[in-house]
Image (cartoon, rainbow, N blue to C red; front, side, top):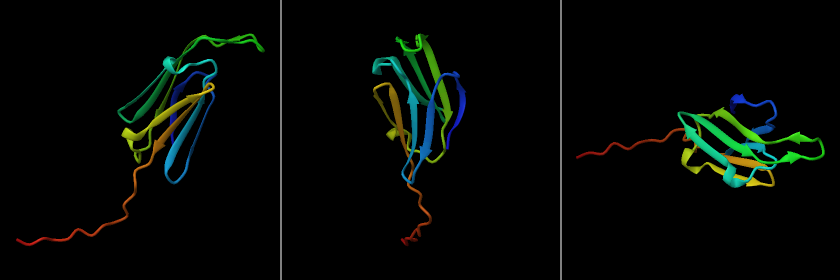
Length: 110
């Protein structure tokens, strides 16, 4: 479905597909909506974000800029891509185009 081109080693993500959509889920602990930017350009989906928190249980700093880029499949509706951030998880829904097997085109006279 997707091929990840570049990402930081500490970015956790998952992808899957069904008959209607391609789906992408990225863990972004401590990230707020205003800290995320998404772009589609030349067949690629790029997601960038800033982290502004720390994991107190592991004492791991989560501060800094992160990004991940995916090559998108050709069967998508770019104008209908939707992103939703909820509790540090970004869900990206990418609808598929409807496949038309074949259609007869009538010949008009006149």
